[in-house]
Length: 79
Image 1 (cartoon, rainbow, N blue to C red):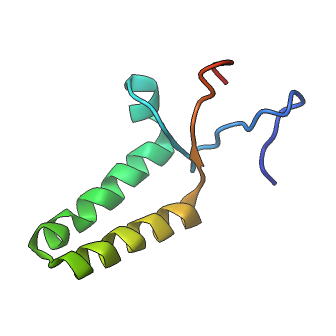
Image 2: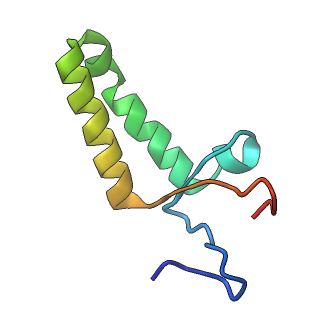
């Protein structure tokens, strides 16, 4: 279930992480979750060696993908 509109556009759901800037994106529930996920790993990341940093990033991305999708607005259509 990709939540696709009749026009074939993917509809962002609350768990999705939206690419972009501004209040609309910043206040989206999926983005709030993603920022909190990043904050939770920040101290460990700063103190980690390069190999551990890669593992921390991989873990964050895996958790984010289980939570929702990463979506980007089409600049041609603004959808």
